[in-house]
Length: 288
Length: 260
Image 1 (spheres, helix red, strand yellow):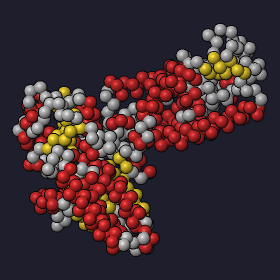
Image 2 (tube, rainbow over the protein chains, first blue to last red):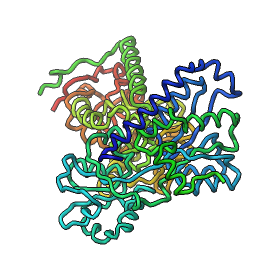
Image 3 (cartoon, chains in turn purple, orange):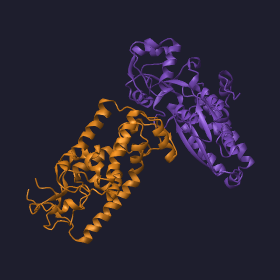
Image 4 (spheres, rainbow over the protein chains, first blue to last red):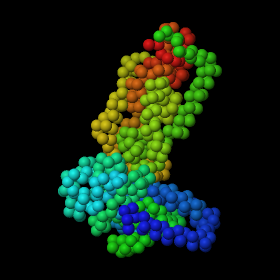
């Protein structure tokens, strides 16, 4: 990204998306009834990591309007949904966080295929105006800086920020600066917005959630500090898909330029973007 | 203050009484449309131990507590309504109250009598309110469940139960068990266990308006026997529902400013 909120990168990506959409529209979008007739089902059950919900909801609406197929969507903590799926629960499409979970589902035979969907990234957030003048990660360790963290927050919210600090070699110094050690990332954001804290580490997607959007300043730090496991999101077709073609087409839609635009807008790195493709290679997000 | 000052005779004709009960049911149904989903989510899908009070921090984005930002407005209006008309919220607006009243229709034990149990048991609601305040404020409102941010109606409930911690399960099954008791003892939850009702009961004593008995009351308890909450006007658990209006042979039931 070229600046704090990634507007240049986003603008370029959205331009590409808009161009693709126009090109697709030029080909003539098929009528919902015509598309629905291509499938044996008019309902598709989709589960995803809850963090994707802000992108999945509008993407699902578009898919429904395009195909006439209703998407029955559940978004929740991916590890919990994964545990259910590895047990007796079933769904037709699963978009989960953490590559290992997708691989486990593949190995267990519950998932028939998966592909990279998007990646998350981490940023520092400060109150508007950045009163503590936070410019780099090391500034969090500066004496007098009020740090807000949520180490007890459900994964990856809490542990990821702690791992970033450990990787940066400033964990102990930053912990001394903590004014809040909470259990909820959303409350962390409230503390930053209100000025109770000078800085915190969150996923970029959190800054795009409507209730927080535009209410904090975003400061980037090197990607090398990101903890790898929570970065990856995949979308997979499950064994219990009643119409594998429909489930496959849905996954295809999410990973098309049109579908990916929703994820970019929600603060994720689309898998088909240059940055996303580099991460696919770097992290080995392959359905082997 | 003289007894009848600012007080209106409660509707005494059968037609007026029916009209009042129809209005009450219509109001309850209207409030069910507004608050019903939030009530349901609070019991079955809220990841917090004390529902309805942490909506601003809740990840369940499809809940009305988040969607309509009713959170602050509702909790400001509730005590104000109690200062105005006592526990009228329970009798006229609460979706849980409506559900309990419907269950109560099936209960063989109406418990519309005055004895040691019916005098002491309503304190249970106050204990529940105190317990909720302790968990919310002293324990920091623990989140003891996986929030299903967006979810199918029944599927999300099933997943919520599947991934709940023991604390959440104990809380939920306690609530559901006490509500289910309403199939045996009419309105058990509302009368003896509801923390919101308990809190409103405390505020009720300062309320400006409500049903009350004049000195013409001869203690025949006919009003008690028609009351879903098994009480008499202005006494403990009275929700100003108006069911007792017209039941008094002495015409001793009034609505308005209570005599001091």
